[in-house]
Length: 105
Image (cartoon, rainbow, N blue to C red; front, side):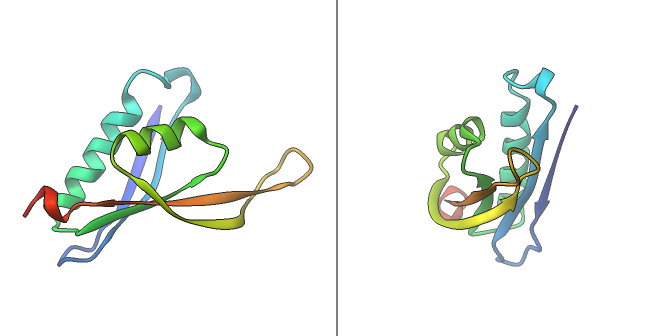
């Protein structure tokens, strides 16, 4: 149904959201928001000053969720993702960041 992963070594190191995935039939029910909240809170508990992620440029639903939660675009990785269809076209990765320091000082 859904899963998420976070890399956050602690000791003041930045956190990185590795993945958030919600099955299509369950999207739009707040599950992604709940997973994102859990990951952000875990990063805060480990004293991460910031949390990063990357998302496919065409994934507008995910980008809107991240923006709503205070993530801002900081970079683009051109042609980062290999797509199976259509025609093996590559997709850009949008790199986003949320500063956490002020949230738990």
